[in-house]
View 1 (cartoon, rainbow, N blue to C red):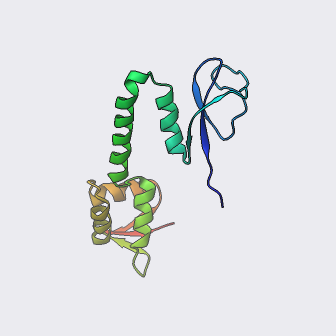
View 2 (tube, helix red, strand yellow):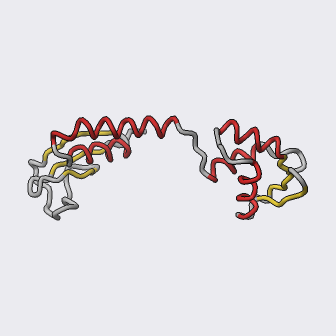
Length: 146
């Protein structure tokens, strides 16, 4: 399977850059059709890289180096931060259900510690109860409903 490539094209009419799969079409900024002389500013293989390259190409030259540094630093930071979204947490909770379909406070605590989540077991499970994912069976015990 071939890898998708994205092009960062600079419009010859307005000078703005945008992302495209092919070197044809229209500029989303001014509506002008791309000519054969359209400038390909960059070629990338991911939408994340495309977003960054389009932003950089539309930034004044003196500011590009600083913007690139800040954007890369932000990407590195987000890659290091654990995914603590509700979906990710509840996905992990499904994995620690015991044989009778219950979650214990100790099992939930283990998940929270592995994910680096600072919320307490009670806070997370109250959210799960509120969303109808679990039912409290007793102190420190919940039945998974999904």
